[in-house]
Length: 236
Image 1 (tube, rainbow, N blue to C red):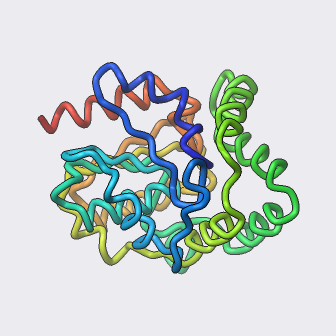
Image 2 (image 1 turned 60 degrees about the vertical axis):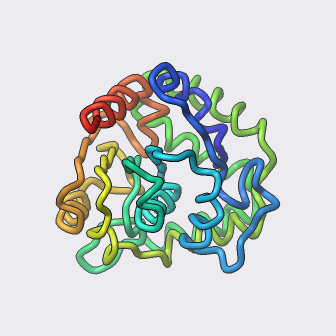
Image 3 (image 1 turned 90 degrees about the vertical axis):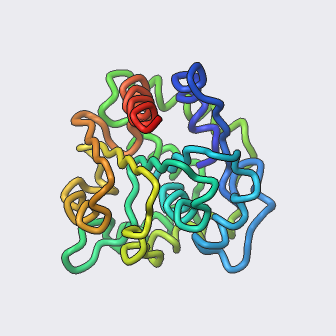
């Protein structure tokens, strides 16, 4: 995905905040910028110079991994952290709910064969729980298509990050006020793992939207914006 996925959500926040959307390296307008090695640390290093001062960083899904890393590496710039449908570790493992390795391998094979078709299926997952799912998918597809296609290298490496990156041992060092927003219907970041995340970062706040899936800001934009707004304003 590129930052076009947030186009419909930004207006819900822009009355109260100056909103900056950033394409991850290798995606959207940054599709020609592909750090090597392609790691969460190198992605956050590439993004750090364009962060506004004293900012709230919001990261969705894979972007949530980058956001957590930014909170750790840029404590003087990042004042608050919000993750949406994200986790410190995406891959399932012993005692850790997450995405099955076979499913990630399937994603990789499908993307290699047909990026557009796989993106369409992925968008369908994002809109689950929305009463206007078909229209949501159509709108987001149009917004995402306005940006360049991702680098094939970044696409493959980003999927690898979902399998390999593990910030579980580090999130306890995040000192910024943290909000973690989930969708109860999310099949990629299951709510059964929330208690484990809370154990690792006990000072974080958790909100679960009962009818949302992997992209609450798409299916429930007003509710998601209200939750973010309330969280940030409570810190001021």
